Image 1 (tube, rainbow, N blue to C red):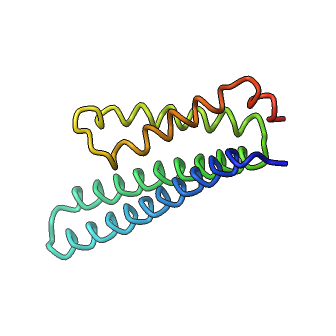
Image 2: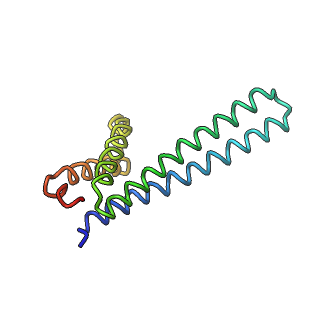
Length: 133
């Protein structure tokens, strides 16, 4: 039987994946709209191409992050060792990007770093690691 903490961690990563997917779609839409606006304004074709390419690149990168978060959630859900490792790595990377929260602390901004620390700490416990195959 899957411990409830594993289920909660999997759901956390799936929710993060959903947010990244929405961000990726927003970037793709924004880059397309920017290209159309610049085209309508008869701005230089070089700038239009650059912004469209940049938007596409960022959208793909964010999409990859979304897929990695979804995979981490699935790996933890299935109690696979690769899922545990991927979840720890993604939580650590998320924690590293949360350093700016220390400069401007706000109670709502502390949720993600606290959850990331809890995930890393929980998944690093030897008895928890032993449950993953």
